[in-house]
Length: 338
Image (cartoon, rainbow, N blue to C red; front, side, top):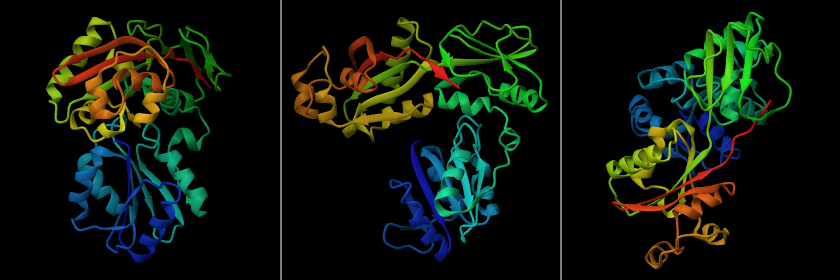
């Protein structure tokens, strides 16, 4: 879910992909014209895209737009789950976000790429073209879960018609409300930031749920995903935590490819952040230590330390061990800004 793929089909495209690696150093490059740092694109593009799409944060095609559309069309699920898809012509003249422009970040990446290679970004999203508040972009940047993505269109269409949209928050939100977004419950449509999804003050209510919890996870190599899922569901229920409020998963870097943890991150649609043993060892706090864990990982505790490493979050559930996994849960109180 965090990988960026850059795919090209011509020599010019391959050269451009190498240039893009300067701004995306961890990007994986594939081409029909392989070179140093570029792997050979051996499969047909539809099969290759199908293999990588789920694990991708973004797929950048240096090609005709038709190639990209045909490759990703069978893979599209929804705007809150699809990878960002961007197309660049091989002369580097135009940069076009094709899919997941807002939530997936394709528009923002397209602007970044265009500035770097001195190209023209072709942004077609209505709110961007008309300089209107994009609630889905704002929610993504402020770590808010959109409970019903169909409400994005409802809010955006009203703002595009210059109608007023209400805004209510149980949490601190700094800054000035965007144009036509007002702190008024007497509106037909409005945005609500609250824990309780039963709060529906508007006939058309867009619920935004703050993401405030971090799952610190340790794992025995090859431990079963079903056991991890059962553990997470039980502990969340016991602590009255809505899974939509999970912000991230954290662990040690030697577990970055652990299948069960990555599957959980994919299901919850949250990032999986890892830390080195030195980063974990240097964090301060009262942790449940284990000599066995230290002999394997180099640090006496993974799950609690990983939680604490994540922006110094408060540990609210101490280490739990079960079926090859350890779990701790951290909390960071949400606040946002315009």
